[in-house]
Length: 88
Length: 258
Image (tube, rainbow over all chains, first blue to last red; front, side, top):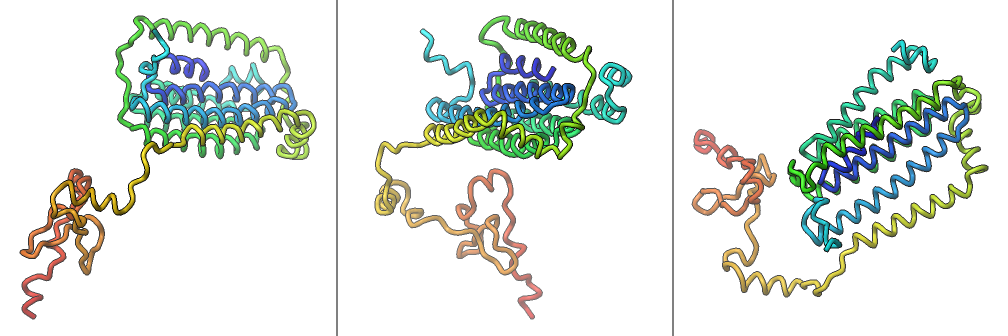
């Protein structure tokens, strides 16, 4: 359910940072599912997967935010709709 | 509450925890979606993370819960807030859409996807006996996780640490600012100050007032005729109305006569 909300958020919001936060929400929802399944099945593999997902998500936040900062510096706007230079 | 008890064999206190915190987390996520200001979204997101950490701890994932608080709520949300401050917290979205009809289609598609997910999760969990993590956690959660991490998942562990290093390097490269002109020296700055602007401020503006009872930056200095000097206070403070009147720090008439 959290995943769905995050997915809606990514498509609908236009501030790049809020879009990013919705992506994080989706990752967290997936983590929660991992942990729950780990508990149901009685082994810790799900928790290890959740741990790795957390690490990867942290990396992705770092790089993504650096990209946003760079775009903002050159384009002075944090709106996702404005970054359409690749379009004809 | 009865549903969770019968279907999943969850214990009653945990079911209560889930049904109280779960809707709160969903409400916070919805609020994060709909909030106009980005900072509100960030704070609601932090609440969702903390709720998830509580869920993890309640489900015998102690290490993961603490890591969630430390890494996600601590580092990631802090990073978000910093970048929000950098980019500008006033950059709100306009509610009109550039692609027509995007919003209803997005909501429909996401609801359909959500239904799919719910059905999948239900199929995977409803038939199974819940085993619980007591045997897996026999020596404690952290040693058990460590056993798995370093035996079966060693390769993934090393690759992920390489990824972390690469991500840090990438962020440094992206955020690097390359100067195109040379940095102005002190002499250049001084020459610029004298050539542009009035001579009165060329040597620098007056400092805020220093009095016996108060020497913070919000009291103006006094000119020789006793009136406060207007450019001894930062313009931001003046615009905010944070300036204190300097008359309250002057000696009163009665005291001077004594």
